[in-house]
Amino acid sequence: MLRRRNTSCDRNVGGKAVWSKGPCLPCPARAHNHYGMKIATWNINGVKARIDNLQHWLRESSPDIVCLQEIKSVDEQFPRLEIEALGYHVETHGQKGFNGVALLSKKSPDEINKGLPGDDSDEQARFIEGIYSTDTGVVRVVSLYLPNGNPIDTEKFPYKLSWMQRLENWAKKRLTLEEPLVLAGDYNVIPEPVDARNPQAWLGDALFQPQSRQAFRRLENLGFTDAIRASTDESGVYSFWDYQAGAWQKNNGIRIDHLMLSPEATNRFISANIEKHVRAWEKPSDHVPVTVTLAV
Image (tube, one colour):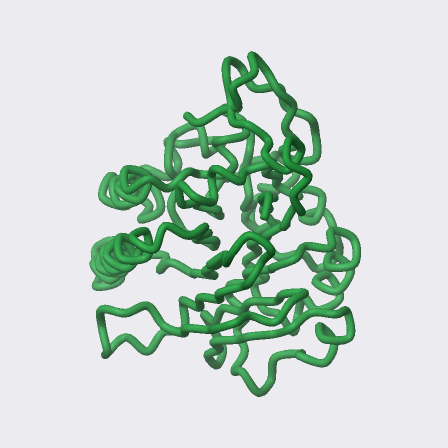
């Protein structure tokens, strides 16, 4: 695990300070006075149903770039005016009724790319990339909504694995640019048993299958860093609680929303956070925002 060089450091995870054990990453923004860019990912689970929460959270958290998933809206019906009124530029890759991803940003992107390459027949809206200029170059940010894959005995699971392979192929090419890249989104993957309150309950689920976890590890092996796990190795750090069976009240959660950082982004890492308190709001999404702050 990548850490700062000091013997210990504080990180803000899940709304509380966490002390890392052993050496960990430098905080370059503090050392070099760089601007901290806050990038967030949030599976909103229907943007029109969650617009009040989204507006409140944008005011409260004030992220620079937001990656939304499951907006469940076509581009024309996205509540663009409400978001623009808060000072955000809006880019969407929508789909009627389900899926759909978006990028909200305080600064307009230089370029937007929609759709994950590798399968021209795939019409599901699950991928949007934005390129943003900064004082130190550019930052590439992707909002992705990885297929769920359930039930695993249907075509949905092979589609999930194929999509992850396409993502890996795409990421390999982007890494050759040697630019800060953040792959942010709902991965629908529980990377390790520590990322679930009750791992045994997920053994038959596509989110915890060995093939899904291996595909996630291949991204790490390319050089990507899981931002939250760069902050803490503690258990009990979750981003999703089901609406059913009192999962939230029992803290029966899983961590499936990830911010994966390229080496160049990792070098600019300041902090990462799961904004757990948002799950307690009225009419919540079953996911909460996850954020990373980079020195740019």
